[in-house]
Figure 1 (cartoon, rainbow, N blue to C red):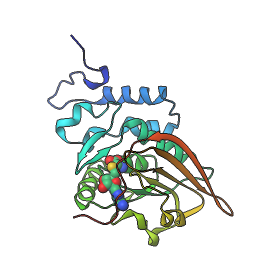
Figure 2 (tube, protein in one colour):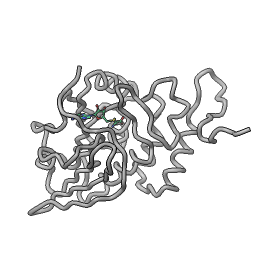
Figure 3 (cartoon, rainbow, N blue to C red):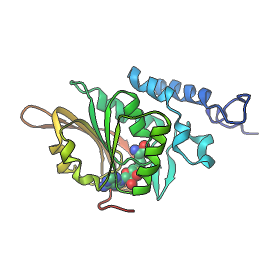
Figure 4 (cartoon, helix red, strand yellow):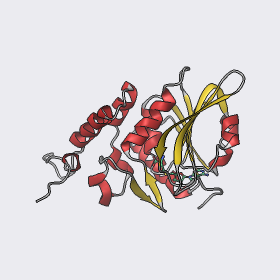
Length: 230
Ligand code: SAH
């Protein structure tokens, strides 16, 4: 008989609701083993109830090392990718306070950023995702998040500049509007590449006179799409 993965089965908690504390701690131990070191990120992911960000039917798998569907063909990234992108963002030279996220989706990535102490501005093109994410954040007491239903290719000019911008869907090339909204020394973390083709997590840093571009991990994100949906 094949046993399920250890971190997929929460032990009995004594009440009727599953207790995911143990699965969450196992996820954080795995993140450390995968090379994540930032204490704020590890603490945030150890605190946040990731199961609140996914359909009940999928909750048993929410701490597994995989991405999960959130509806409308979109996905919640695997824990490692959320941690990795947050770490790339927060390890900038300057303190990262104001952060723009493109692609609210389930609201988990914005919750991690807010739990790390950032003021989060999150944009989503599919309106119902935004409404649900807002409710989830309120339920968890996360109040330092602002929401915009808009095509994220335009960014959020009235709130710019941002110390960091994180894009959780993949454009084919770097969106110029977003680069323009970076503060000096600010960082844009974005998966670049066509869907189905090779995508690379890319770090663009605004320096005194120019921009510095660095490609890191191979990744697999849903495409960044133009326009808004209701
Ligand atoms: N950060 C999310 C990941 C969601 S998947 C989470 O933690 O769950 C990517 C999201 O990007 C989807 O919700 C998708 O609708 C959104 N998206 C894609 N293109 C976009 C665009 N141009 N502007 C805003 N959001 C976009």
